Length: 159
Image 1 (cartoon, rainbow, N blue to C red):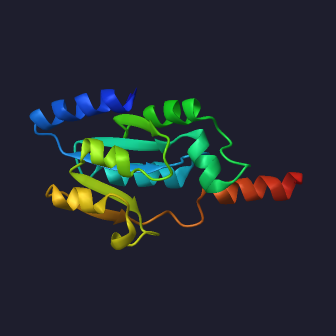
Image 2 (cartoon, rainbow, N blue to C red; image 1 turned 90 degrees about the vertical axis):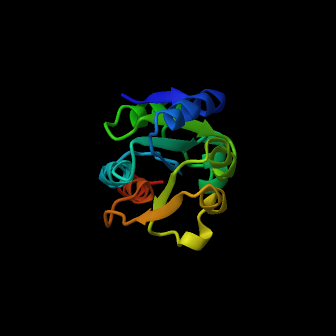
Image 3 (cartoon, rainbow, N blue to C red; image 1 turned 90 degrees about the horizontal axis):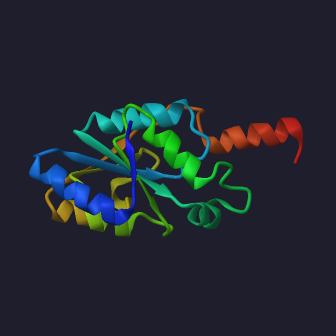
């Protein structure tokens, strides 16, 4: 089971992983209603290195990005569920709307986002590139998203 870290704890742990020669992969997201697409994506991200760190948008951040109906699941519960996945080694909440600060703090070896992003618009790419790391995108499982699940619920049970 993965561990939920504060940012300062994660910084210390990142240095330990570096000393051990481990390749650290970082991705981030809301992970509001966990579904098959998330699990597939995180498994593929983990395959790119030894340690998978997931930056998790805080509830306040999600609300700013997704609107007043989100998140559905509180940040503590989202973090716990993510940490319970076999592919996830570490979870760390961040309050900002982008993960730039946490990426700058831990400087992962590999930065991963979904293929709906182009390499040019991935936040933190400059930090990872400057440190000699690399950035990758991963294809999504089609027709799987938290937003579509929320829409299905609203359509079935009324707004």
